[in-house]
Amino acid sequence: MAARRGIGTVSRDYNEALRQLSTLYSNRQATNLFDKSIAPNASSVPPKDLNALAIPEMREWLRRAGYEPKDLARLRHIHIAGTKGKGSVSAFATGMLRQYETVGTYTSPHLVSPRERIAIQGEQVSQKLFAEAFFELWERLSEAAKKDGKSLTESEGPGSKPFFFRFMTLLAWHIFLREKVDSVVLECGIGGEYDATNVVPPEAVSAAVITQLGIDHVAMLGDTVEKISWHKAGILKPGVRGFVRRMDEKPGVRQVLQQRAAEKGAELIELDDASVERWGGVAGRLPGDFQKYNQALAVLAVRQHLGMSVDPKTAFLNLPEKMFTGLKEASLRGRCEIIQQGHIGWYLDGAHTKDSMYEVAKWFASNIGNDESAVLVFNQQERDATQLLATLLDTVQEVTGRENIFSHALFTRNDQEGPSTDEEARDLSVQTRVAKMMAERAANCEVNTFDNIQDAVTEARKVAGSHQKVLSTGSMYLAGGVLRALEPEGLL
Image (cartoon, rainbow, N blue to C red):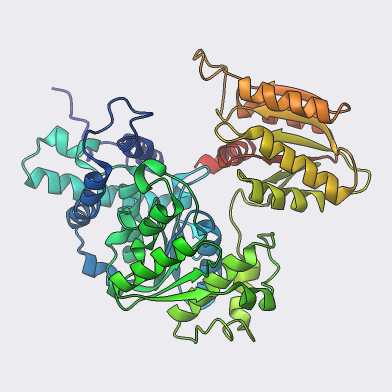
């Protein structure tokens, strides 16, 4: 009889961990349950009821993993929610906290490897640690399923595991508890009230941060900023201070946040712009004038975490050297990232909004010499690609004073490799549209379209020649795809 290929007989290395992780129900499949416009078989259960099940279900998964919410109080968390700026605030908070103690960081999404989501002291965990912790957690969940009467095959497979984001959240906590970190910077996935991270109890949270709010994940969170704010403010907890930028220009949002804080028994500290403007922020590896607001929120949260004064009028005066260093050194993959390979400098940023593209354009233009030309690799599949490209070109022209700096512009889909036999995957209508716009605006620029990132990167290498810079921007998908192409070992 052939040996059964169970969890005990398969390889327990990192590659096998990634393979098994890929069998889990994806985040997109989970969010599609809320959206009948993209999922014909979407659940008939109202979103409100689907959301209401989220926290009880996550608490049960936590129990199956061998933990109770109170176990998380062995860690002190800074919990972060918001539409934009979560990643930056997480990076700044991590940068500061690591100067004082051992800090774990849980963020999403990842660009290249799932390991990026779980970091200790600002560095993603090793393949060895990831694999060891992965199989420990997988087996705990399998054993719990067996106790519930599942067959051996059922219990060992993905059917007895939560969907991807919930599993990764459990894995992060398992690693942080296993490695005995002091504190955790915990970033929400979607929303806040019903997010998997929100099973963390009040006694485990030192501070909550709500970053910039906007329209996103409408099917799950609602179609107005006020409705979305209700969800984000769900991370506020009794007796825990929450920090948010004061939103005088959005009175409805401000009212929702204040009401939610009162409901939750939390103290809401509103950061006024004047205090931030007087301070001015810290110049570092994450450029952009807007970053000073993210830095300020991170400073207040970390000061609260460390037991320091959090009065916005004085908190930024004479900033401790450790905090200054942490803010200066904070970085994010795919955000204003420069990779030098031979004579080619690759400038990567996943900007996909008008505001963020404006900042990226200023950053890149400031790195271009008076007589230098550059290569553009651009992707945006879902939003208004022509508007984004126009913002980029207008801003670069404004900063450099030159009509056009790009010798070549390569417009690609966000698929990693090709060619594809799928007609939808080969649809280049968006790329053709922005390529036409580029050709009209810059007659001296050679324009090409591609159905995959790998081919676009290969062409960029070819046309860049020596001593030329390549700007890759337009989406986080492109940033991740270019990183995969430039650093294939990063997949590991």
